[in-house]
Image (cartoon, rainbow, N blue to C red; front, top):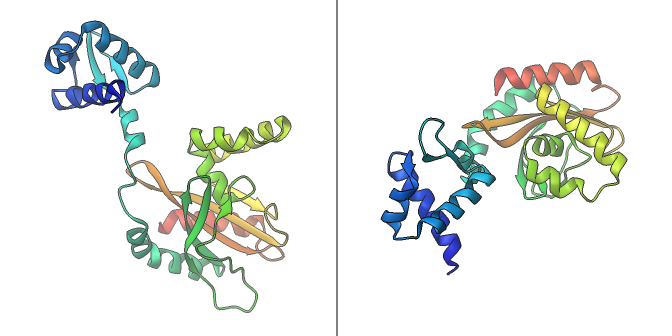
Length: 229
């Protein structure tokens, strides 16, 4: 066992379980640690954003950044059961294919699909890994994850990095992403994040053939998805 890691978690647990506003001396006494050891660990946790110091007293509290390391509150199977009627409604209103997609590390996959009853439609594979950087779905996940951005952008040329960073900022600002034949010819896609407890746990999207599913239809699809999710 690595003692420094254990001590850091012991400190976080102590703070949250004892009023979330505690003195350094209290932590040191409770955990039987030297004050300098606790100070150094608190300083590191503070630099990382997991702990902050009270403005009026020399006390420490755990920040809301801790929520970043919580697992998603629901499983994929629950998401699928919950959102199946939503996808069906989106497809009914847009008359195009809708998807529920989840992140799998640096990839995503479609977990659920609802197809329209028409001869020409988009039908992408379920349970297949798709790359992030050239898809509306992937860019939604990237826009909401600094870690994912850092991982994927570092492998791109600098001009491409800057262009994509600007696009991700717009996605975060606007609340949706568009793919106009970027990932695949003749395929357009509009995507929005799906939140639970203020975290993006999935992406909803509507895809269609580029010859009929154009920008006005895509913007209407975004309105519909936001209205029924």
